[in-house]
Image 1 (spheres, rainbow, N blue to C red):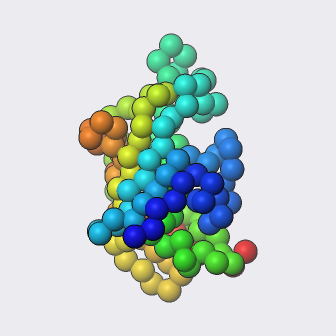
Image 2: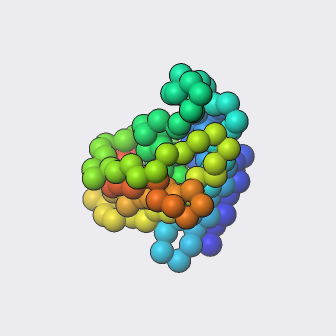
Length: 140
């Protein structure tokens, strides 16, 4: 089983601060579990919402996407994973600065360089977001 920290993940992902939204990722028997602790004052909560900072849903989707990369990282040699779609995305609970988001993901289907992933994000085991994320692997 493969386990990667933030620095190791950067070998496979083009994301860098402030858009690297994953701290660690590890393969488990049925998929991948990744973690990200939301900083105390990230740029994306400063205006969302003053006095009650909440991580935007689109950022939660990005956290889930980045947290799924370890599922297919070996296919990323010379390639870049781009979003191809999001289906059945649901938001159930707010995420705030200081929260640790745990992403659990597994591949639901593959077709050539097209990969679909079932992902869910939780905080303290409470479901915050879930959905099917689709990626297209394109040549760098």
